[in-house]
Amino acid sequence: MPKQYASGFQIKWMITHFSIAMQKTEIMFRSPPIVVDVLGGVKWYLSLHLRDIEVAEYIGVYLTRDDDLVGIQVPIKFTIELQTADMSLRERRESLESVFERNTTWGFDRCIKRSFLLEHMNSTLLPDNNLLIYCKIERAGFTDYIPETIMNTNKLEFIWSIRPWSKFSYLCDVYSKVNFIRECKTSFCVFICTKDVSDQNMILKVTEEGPKRNFLICRMSILDTKGCEVLLRETRHQFSKESDTTFANLFPEEKIYNSYLKDDTLTLRCNLSVAATNIHQTKHASPDDQSKEEKVIQECFEHMYKHSILCDVKARAGSKIVICHKYVLCKRSLVLKNKLTRSEQISEGYVVIDFDDLDGNTLQQMIDFIYSDELSDLDYASSMKLFTAGHKYQIKCLEEKCSSYLRTFFSFQNIFDILIAAQKHKDRDLKRCAIIYINTYFSRICLTAEWEQFRTTKKKMAVKIYKLIQRSKGI
Image 1 (cartoon, rainbow, N blue to C red):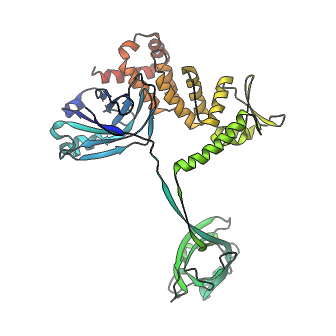
Image 2: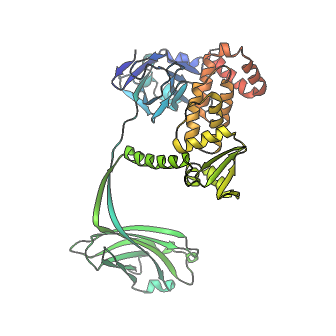
Image 3: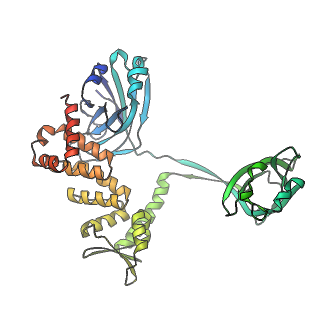
């Protein structure tokens, strides 16, 4: 029985005689399915992958939402832990916020190393040869509030050329006066010197001459003959009533090579920062506050898009033309940005881009999503087309949402098409969910024409899948 609490529940899954289980040919064990009311009455189970092909030296633990009939999306966070012989919990793994739809699996490929569990920590993590896995599941969606404290600074940058550098060791020091203006009226004298002949380090000496600022940050870098930074040193100078001069080591002279010098000149880029009069400015920002501002901007662009206001792009697929904004397309997709940059077609003041790989309906849905971040009333065919479009045009959130939609459309007729697409687009989570579905219903799937076609057209993948299923069944 799972232990329930206000916003989630906890599963304790015990696998007895674990070392014997490891000797079997199964690559995966599943816990019995669990249904609880606290997260919408959806069905969950845990799975343990003992011989994952991609990370064979590790044991993986996953949480799956089963193919239930509940249509809701469940945003959750979950943790996986192993119970030790003294009843404490170890090897904690914590997920990011994940949205679980039907047939969704998330987890940890590298939960624990096989050798670590079976050899080094056998007596600790396998008491009485039993493996106990704890999974705490809770609803996500809470808000983090972030306090920010900002210290305003005044910055000044200048290039300092010291010539002739070859004579530097015979000079007492070289210096430059630095004056801050505007609201921060203060000045410093910056020296570069050596302590004595035996000391090979260059010394930075800073003297505060103007109104007291107490603290100075000096960032000094050597520029080579091409103007590139080759050595960098940042020093911090704290002044006091007793002393208006500070010292700091700069660069060893031996590190300043002749190749850095042009016409016997050492060139330095100097950046100085002091606190402004208005030292602290504190504000409290939360992701929700930021997202509200972003949402307002998004809604403005969406309104302009729907009413064709100030549009400057015509996206074309066959006879379908969608009027939109270059700024929005460039912001959401680097591929679209490059496509727009290369386009030389102009029509009535619009930049024209053609999408030969999309049909008109898919183009419309993709651009609608770019503006709204929403998908609605998608069927299987549309989800598959948009999944491919999201991958090709690097619209990551579109690809992820379509991946989630595809998991709700698993059937005996389309599961192999989804598996092939997941493999092609390197969607490991969708691929894993598809394999789990095939494994669960293989006794019926193997009788379908789709399986026969898959075996014929994708022989290597079919053999690999069949071997995985045989191992999971202990054959």
